[in-house]
Length: 315
Image (cartoon, one colour):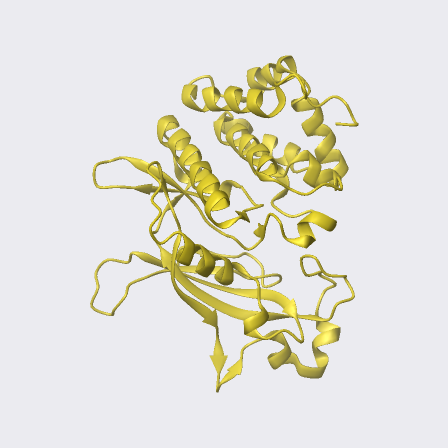
């Protein structure tokens, strides 16, 4: 086991290191086992989940190479079958399904849409180390920069927007020469940027401490790569914080209630002065490479004349 979710509710994601054959001594791939929320009348051919996204990426990125990044490559994936029947909560619970499912809405669907969870598995590679396990400032900076470089490649080549840049979804892959490359994983929340669900009524998706202001406030404009870059900025701040206050900063950015969390971000990114005040309180000055990324990314996102921070509520 590489990861096991702490709750049976939701996707209950489990990840295992796997080898191609029983005789292999190298476990070079990850098997992801999870329960995908889908409409009750949906067939596999109609699904639009992470496996479908990675299959699309595999086809379009087969000859593409990122010099500073790794791309998650899917080997195989699909629905778990039991006696040729799709394994799902509908299959297990039958008529009791309606009484045992919480009111979770499928991305882009009405909350009243009948839904169940489908048991899905996929194998992909390479195996990486989660960002929170990286202790070296240079390696962490290279990992985030590489992951966002792959984000740009994926968006430009396939039109897929990740929408969940977070601490658990950025991995470091170390090569034989000692170099580190960043890799982006977990495309459960991803969407084609020109998908009508993103254009007509964008929904609030992602991991709370890292979500963009527009995402948290539910601003009625299409989500773009800028939202993911803003999430990367919050991620950099959380990693570079002093060890004794990292949890405090993540808790502050992930405050209960989306509006409160968005208000805190508007205060944090209101001006260069407010950013520097946060840096002086929370950020470890030894993280020189991360600090360069934080300041540079802030300037790119909020420092230009047409924006000048985040203080204006109409922005």
